[in-house]
Image 1 (cartoon, rainbow, N blue to C red):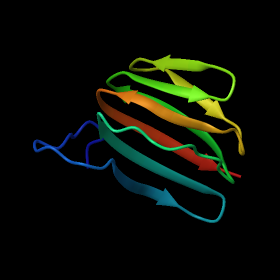
Image 2: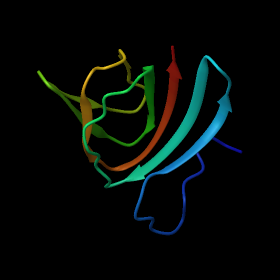
Image 3: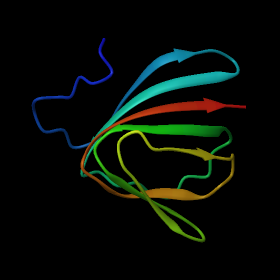
Image 4: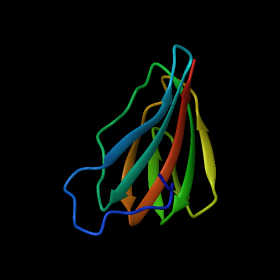
Length: 96
């Protein structure tokens, strides 16, 4: 698998691939293209890196834009959602 592989055909929902998982960590590749999300309130901390595309996330107190190579740490129970995405490839690490 190559992290930069992107589907050639349209897809209605984000595509999530679990790359590694154990009792303390989960690593996912997420591919999106125009999808948005509802509000998340996760039980895990999340480190998210945008590998490709542009995205905008909303938190309860602010919005932030991400470009390729930019990352965020989202502490557990920090409410957030995805407002906008272009053709995005994300690398997400969820941990306790």
